[in-house]
Image (cartoon, rainbow, N blue to C red; front, side, top):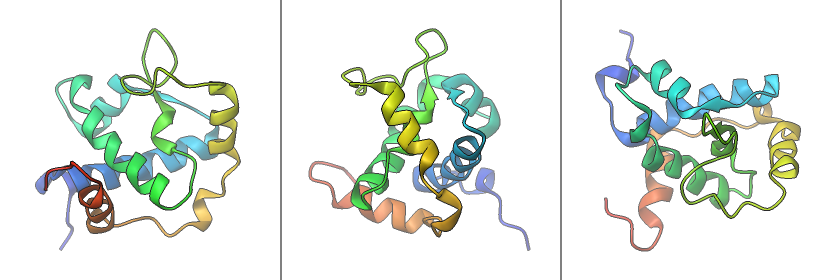
Length: 125
């Protein structure tokens, strides 16, 4: 039986889904807008991605990896959005993401992403 992300749309599983999308983007040296990611997930709008991308960010930080979530950018600004507007040298950060061999890293499961997120102080289960 095939399991689908859309049939069990927890935030952690959607983060896992986005992670897979972003690995392909990193390989192709591309960024996606929030709207593009929302469309790929079948969401009605882009405004719901911030928290889910935060799950990916937490997992990357926990594993000492570049924050692949930063490949999702604002349509007008071309840079990552809320909470990341203090980025210094965005081009350098993006190049670190592109240079990482993401295909050599075993992708995190939704449970692994969720566990890292929950372990951060102040996060609700």
